[in-house]
Length: 359
Image (cartoon, rainbow, N blue to C red; front, side, top):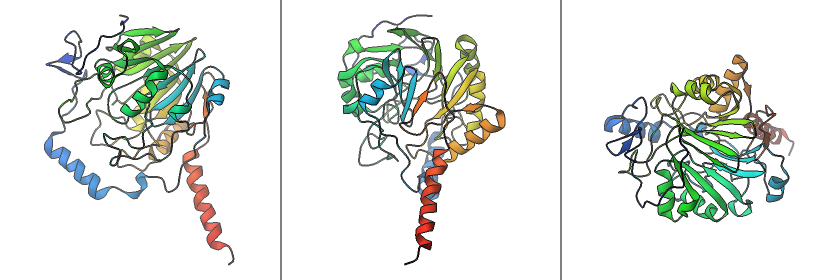
């Protein structure tokens, strides 16, 4: 298994010719994904425009536990704080790490249009202490936020990315000495934290003409005998079992459970597949991510939580569902409350009481 050195500067992302994932200048999945085609793309767009239910957004603000630099510094090691969507703040070896940091109001190339946040980040970038490393899974807007990257860059020690994604960062102005780019099954170590880029079933691109010019990946994270798996975005694939056999069992799997649809089964998992991936990985605790922050699909905003919760109960799987900003121990996770139900139910109950109150 190769260890990748600090990458060299490149102005335009391009698929390295030596990568087994590259073909004709583009990256590809182990199992080719179905090309949507113009007709299917237009049909999906029409469905989104004309049939989207009002349940895709919460009725009222969702609960957020505010964080501060002092609280992060006082938090014990092996802590996790969920900041929203797939943005996780990890405390490993006494240092802070971020996954897929998105802090902007919208997951979009412009801030006047596109999916808008349901909640503010529990802590702003200005308030964050120094960050040892940022782990990026791919370059889609709900995972790679240029404004956040540039604001974070002065306080980040290293950015660890799949091939080509680091080139984007460098083109934006990030110091090349801070960027490490990995192919699938390659690894690097940063101050005792081992990071292995592993396969995912997805795609990439931020515009009309750069599709699949950068690689996408999941990540194995090993620190102080703690084993974590971060899926990034992915459809279900056979390499979950390979990853479980080579690097498992995992203490916690951080698996995408949201923004799915029957019309794109090979790039996002249904909750039943998330549960199977967790089993393939030999996970102890499952924490669903990629939900609760943006409206990116046709399902109700709480549906991913409800479905994975029911499946976990039926399957005897330990499920961790911390609210935004709530601390979770990675060594002894807590199940957490069903905050996505409780907050909306409490609001509805308060309204009913107000309506019944005498005038």
